[in-house]
Length: 261
Ligand SMILES: O=C1NC(=O)[C@@H](c2ccccc2)S1
Ligand SMILES: [Zn+2]
Image (cartoon, rainbow, N blue to C red; front, side, top):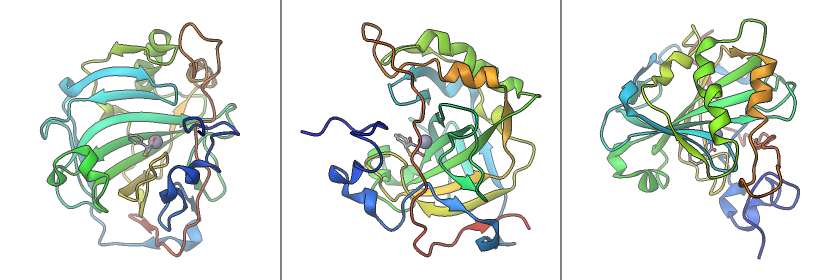
């Protein structure tokens, strides 16, 4: 049997379709966004996040990413507006990053690969639960924020990166409370939106993507911190958790809309 999916040569994105046929679908993510092909939609409303800091629960290393988990048992932290109908519940946030500062994001913007991409995953409670939402085209909404290495790192990222030392190896989890992830948003609310999929197996095509145009800044040291996470458990050899990104997939005629000119 093929090993569990991952990002290595024997179980990486080029082979996911062997166990997850949706990976070869027509609405896969991420994609490359070229500004010349984007349609400005002046009717696109602003999006709004109203998050309860008390909903934050834990931070964990699942061997594939660093993830912060929130209480999504009721409409406690929600995302509304933009291309969405109704309130979507914040379930978790996580990141994708590279082995060096010049790549790591999943979406690529006018040929630019950012050092990392942060995903805030929300689901539509009209579908009962997250598993049910995965089966619906309007089931999930992900806000993507690009991380760029620069000289004035955003202090709000520190909280997540300070916890890294407590979750170095796969399976490690630590309490992560009193955290409002909206502090991570950049100043501008400008965004691109399109319909796509999970960027990991099972690659369900249930995601309304809301990608923020303005990246947030992190330091090279902070990126090195993220790269100090291990894919393996504490009694196994260190296997640096890096390059956990899926490359851009075929756009297949999809329209990417921009909320800005
Ligand atoms: O945007 C995405 N990034 C990921 O890693 C995928 C995912 C996987 C599991 C849970 C939530 C989202 S979908
Ligand atoms: Zn993701």
